[in-house]
Image 1 (cartoon, helix red, strand yellow):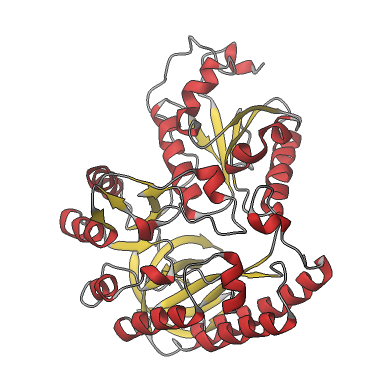
Image 2 (cartoon, one colour; image 1 turned 30 degrees about the horizontal axis):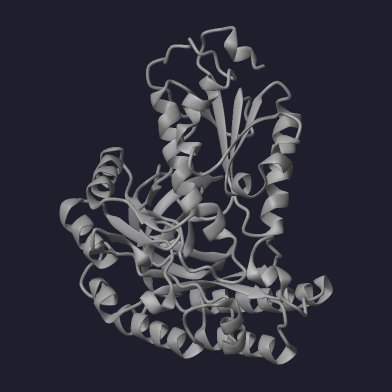
Length: 427
C-alpha cells in the first residue's frame, strides 16, 4: 500500500500520455479532475506519489513504450503507485499488472473516475479529505484538446481501435461549448477538437460542420484546429468554412495509410487514391497554404514491391507537410492479423526507412516554401533565449527573444529551415 494512506498532505501526481490527440485530451481532463480534488500535478521527471500512464495499443511499439515507461517510473520512484489506463488496458490488462509497481489498470470506460477508484481500491485513504484546488509545478499548455467524439464503427482490417474504444458516440454541443469557454477563461488561445473519428460527429443529427459553426459563434477562442479527418469526410460544405474564417487553422491531418488502391481495399478503407487526391485539391483550392499531414503504414500483409512503389509515388506526388510512418503491426483479433503473406521485419524496416526519408524531403520542401513569407505563431516554450511555437498551419517556428512570449501570438518573417521547422524573426 502507498504511504499516502497515512498522512494528510498534498499528493503529487505525474501523467504521461502515449498515442493520439484523443488520449491527450483525456489526460488533460484527468489532470483537471485531480487538480480539483487538491492534488499537485508534477512532471514525470520530478518526485511523485502517483504515476498515471494513459496508454496506446495501436501497434506493438506503443505497447512496448508503455511497459518501458512504467518500469522507468518504478525505478525513479519505487514507493509510488503506478496506474496504467486506456487502450492497452482494454487489450491486455494482465500484462500491465504484472509490471512491478503497477497497482491499478483502468480501461477507457472507467479512467475518468480515477480519483475515486484510487480511494475505492485503498491506494489512497478512503477518508482522505480533498484539499483546496491543487496546482501545476510548471506552466500549463497553450493548446487544449477537447474531446467531441469517441469510438469507431469502421473496423479497418488492421485496426484494434474499435475493439478498445467501442462504437461511435458524440458529445453534446452544449458540453463542447462550455468546455471551450472554460478554456478561454483559463487563458488558452487554441483548442483542438479531438476524437477517434471526428468527421463522423453526429449528436442528434447535428453534424461536425454545424458544431464548428456553433463554436465559432458562441466562443471567442482565437484558434480552432481539427485533429484528424478521413478523405471522404472532406466536402465542399466543410472546406468552405475556412474561406473567410481566420480562426480556423489551415491544418488538415488526413489519414492515408497507403497510396495503393489494392492495399487500401485489403485494409477496408472507404476511399481510393483518386478520392484522396480530390480531397487534397479541394483543401488547397480554398486554403492554399494549408499544411496537410498524414499517416502511412508500410509492410501491410501482402504488400508487393509494386504496391509499395505506388504508395511511395503517391505520397511524393501529394507533397505532405508531415508524414507519420508506421510499420504494420499485428494486432490480435483484427482481420489482418491472420492474413497470408505477412511481410518480414527486414523488408518493413527497409520500406519504412525509404518512406521516412521521403517524409523528411516533403517536410523540408513544404517548410521551405514559406521562406520570405509571414506567419502568425502561438509561442509555447523557451530554452536558452530561443522560443518555439506553431503557426496556424502547424509549422514549428523558432525565434530569439528576451521577452516572455508564453501563450502569445505574434507575426514573424520566416528566414530559413531550422530544427525540424523554420527560423524566423519576430515582427
